[in-house]
Length: 231
Image (tube, rainbow, N blue to C red):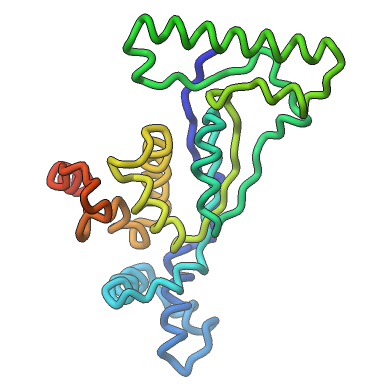
């Protein structure tokens, strides 16, 4: 069964922008952080966040964290996202959860090609049959799973602080990123901006607010990317 990813924020630091702004002001004030937080309204917090962003003072962003639910994403995406090490991950276990009748992600390039789609569907069916046969032979799920494909769906809970999220968005919202993680990262960014617009107002691929980080591997479409993020 083909599934579509579902991305949501399930928790984040309460009033993340005020927390970050208070932490930043604490670096430049004799007043304690509790008193700084009490006297910090939203407008003042946003103004201060713009100031520290212009100074490149990103360490204070680590005081705000965001937890996302990523449902119906591929095991291939799991391999990509766990390369971001300043994060916490909890993943549906293939040792304890049986994958009989597993769902999978269908790459767009395969979906658009009838012959490729037929090959892909046969491969998914064969993998499922092999997995079920191994279980019937008494092979434990932790070993039977070795025949399952990268396309197999999983569910991930991931927590990152705001600083790591900015880094994640710079890399994974880029046109050069793999299509599935780019789609998931773009939705994560949309949700993060809704939750904390002052923290993520300039988030996105590196070319949006500066030079492309891909060098000679650049997609060459920076103007279109900047326009998309401006809108």
